[in-house]
Amino acid sequence: MVLVRYGYSDEEDLNEYELKREIKDPKQRWIVRIIRSMKDYYKKCPYYDTRSGDCFILFNTEDHKCPREGRYEGCPILEAFLAERYDELKKRGKPIPYDFRDLALY
Image 1: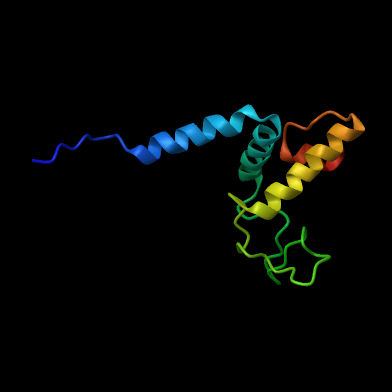
Image 2: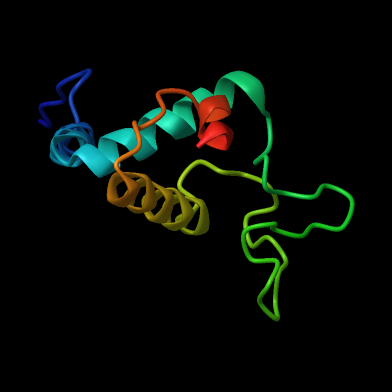
């Protein structure tokens, strides 16, 4: 006889643990908050050109096609860009924006 517990899985615990670990880092917490605010305004990544399939973040590189076709959840390119932007703002001593639309102001 197999005992099955409904509503419990090891994967849920692992994901919950990973989320708690990420939230402790202020940079990661800010990146997650900015990506969540993007969801309020955009269905696809704002740095994605729908006609050509280009990524504006990678525009100065040889291969500037978006590897994720405009999906920004979990995009390593977008996360690296936001982390670089966070470091740049901290270095200048500017306030960290709370919303994605405020990011263009700094």
